[in-house]
Amino acid sequence: MKKKSKLLRKLMLAMMIAMGVVISPILRIEGMCPMSSVINITCAVILGPWYALLCAVLIGIIRMLIMGIPPLALTGAVFGAFLSGVLYRISRNNLLFAALGETIGTGIIGAVVSSPIMTYFWGRKELSLMFYVPLFFTATIIGGVIALVFLGALNKNGMLIKIQQRLGMEICEKVPIIKKDVSVNKTEF
Image (cartoon, rainbow, N blue to C red; front, side):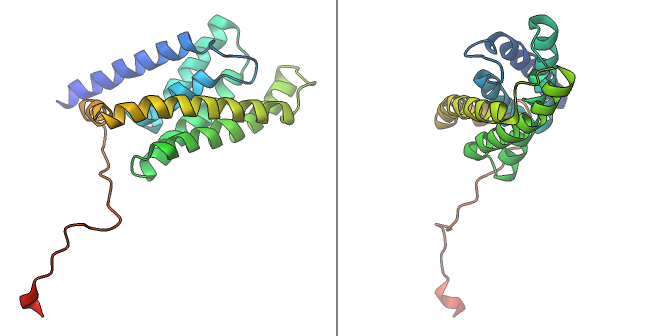
């Protein structure tokens, strides 16, 4: 069963990479690629932080090679993909935290890292940090909402947990704040 799960994870990763490359040009302008955030969050939730990081790196490299996209394809996506998966796991499978991780990782950290790289290595001196942060942040909000709607629908009908289980991913059971099944044995008093 473990071999089958590993193979299914690799197949899912390959599909996520292919989808990321194909849908990334939708709504894309320099510094703003909301569909990248959709893939990052979806991959982070379904496969975890390390797979999401690998997915973002491979999508970025393919986009740079095939589409001539600047290094923003890497610097903008990798932090959000990884942080999305980490916050999703730490929060015990809360989809909002996955979107928050993408927003912080790509919208802020990725934008801050991208600005000097684009200035010093790509020669885009006319674009400052104040160009990248609002665009990256806005793109992650748009992509985050799309991902939340998609993953929320999967979660509501029970498919999300089935996909995760089928892939052999660790599923965190939500711990209730107040236990409903508290019974008191009166003979103990």
